[in-house]
Image: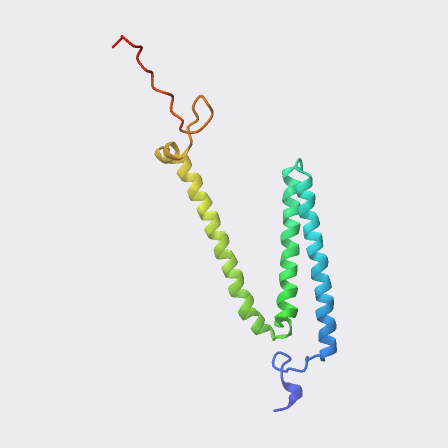
Amino acid sequence: MDHQSASSEVTFEHHISDAEFKQRVKKTTILLSVITVIELGIGLLLYAWPGASYLVVLMFKGAVCILTLAKAYYIVSVFMHLGDEIRNMIMTIVVPLLLFIWFIAAFIIDGNSYKNLRNTYDLHFKETTTPVHGHHGSPHQEEPAATPEPGKQ
C-alpha cells in the first residue's frame, strides 16, 4: 500500500520528541496554574462582595464553569494524550461523556420539578415537612400544660 494514499486519520507521523513534549507539558502546567489562580480570584471576589446582584453572581459562576471546562480540556488533551489520538478515538470518548453530562442534568431538572410539584399539590406532605413555629420561635415547641390551682378540681 502506498504511504501517500493513506488518510491522515490512519497515519501516525505526528509523534514529537521528548524535549518538545516536556516543553508542552511545562506550558500546559503554567496555563493550568494561571487559570486556577483566576478561578480562585473570582471565588474570593464573590465571597468579599456579598451584595452583588444575581446577574453578576451568575456571570461569575458561568466564567468559573467555562474556565473549569478549559482546564479539563487541557488535562485530557496533554496529560492523558487524547490530543494526539485520531479523531474517531476522540469521538469515542467525548460523545459518551456528553451523553453522561446530559443524563446528570436531566435527572437534576426532573428531581427539582418533582420537588416543586409535590410541595405545591400535596398539602399533607407540605404540612408534615414544614416546621411549625410556636410563640418562642423554635419549631415544634409545645406550650406548657396549664396546671390546676391547688384546691380547685
